[in-house]
Length: 383
Image 1 (cartoon, rainbow, N blue to C red):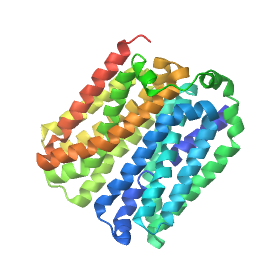
Image 2: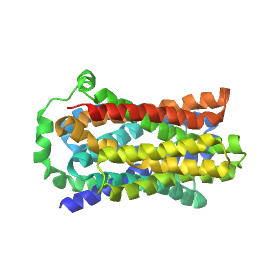
Image 3: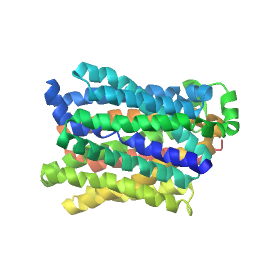
Image 4: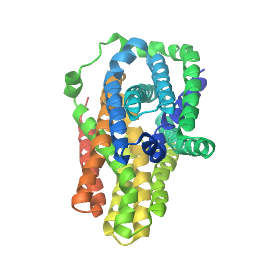
């Protein structure tokens, strides 16, 4: 039964990644169809992001009341409904309204299921689960492309919505499996939900939030600006840069697959340090400015280095703070992650626009060193 539940969680992570790249892939067609500027994609993205922040902050309260299984199932159902709504939308305003349940559902799944996996499964599973997310994120655009070949962007959204409906049904059917672990979750549910003030008063909480903010800011900034960096600094064609920038995400996905095996030998703390070291090498390679091949190698190294950091920080949370407080901590961690992903890439965009895109490796190095400082402070705190 435990193996069956683990398989369902793996499928959930693939499903979690599927919608992530749909908006970017469909937007060139969508914005023309709705008669809005191309920049309006940022409005939808921001609304989704705000929804994920809200649901992440509420995850501790909801999970303690309803349990991880129900929260995950309802959250996936919300996402499925929003995706179907996107597929039949006929106005930009409707997309904005539907972005609210889209974000709430995504954040609910992310925070609840990550905490459950961190408590109940070994570190290798956390790395492989996030590798599954990468597979889902990579598969989404292919599904969209296949749908648009013979139909429209709405067909692609409907296909992904249908897959989410299937997962929702599986999750509701599997609720008895989640309940079998209720005994281990009972101490968490007996405690009252922690307020933000109480969470940040926990020793080490500020450090892990800062580290998570910086990590997600680094990953999202590198992912968003890799293409522009190659075009503006090395004169790479836009078509080639778009393909080459995908190497960053390939590095993350492949790295997480490999990280699962490395966790047999290395603890979470050393896996995080290893990832940070590889990121540093990658950013320094980009900083050398010795040619496009070196820059591309640097981007791949940054992706490989990112691979173990996110899953290992999450997996180490119950060990640092206790299983009874981990859902509260992970919920706020996720909110910090979304804030970093939401605001730091545009901040670098301003720097690139007014100064130079060559600042990308410098920007990444600054975020990396703040993250390293915060994590080392956390490691010294006895909780």
